[in-house]
Image (cartoon, rainbow, N blue to C red):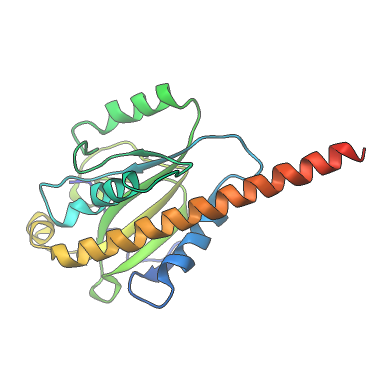
Length: 206
């Protein structure tokens, strides 16, 4: 499993929004864009971590699958229900991504466990996600930034909790996060076009 449970303390730069609050996808998308590189030709890779063998850990692959179904996203998607990225193949998949996209900016996506009152919250923050930390697995950190969704309560029998997480919640969270990423892609593309236009205008007048 690729879930972490160290979500008890809110860290600096960490923005949390409930998946079902008003305008959740728009709020999350703005947080995502605020972490993306500006004025750069750097490729953006979304790495969705998890497995469809556990409902709680299926959040990442569900998001990857939903994003693959969307058209004209300027981001590269890795990790789907058909081709999941999980504990067994994570290192290998990260190496493949680096071969395909030299020095990409990576958005790591994973599910996690947390306090009861935090279930359903989506967190957007700088730095990598640390898959496996909550279940004592040594796995490489993933991402220049990360998005995590708290799918259930931590603290006791994590594997059992994950396997008995409600699919309804995971599906709804996946829908909100995938919509947020699609909106972020549109905003990011618009910002890139605007930045290029301003640069061209500057060059033409100097």
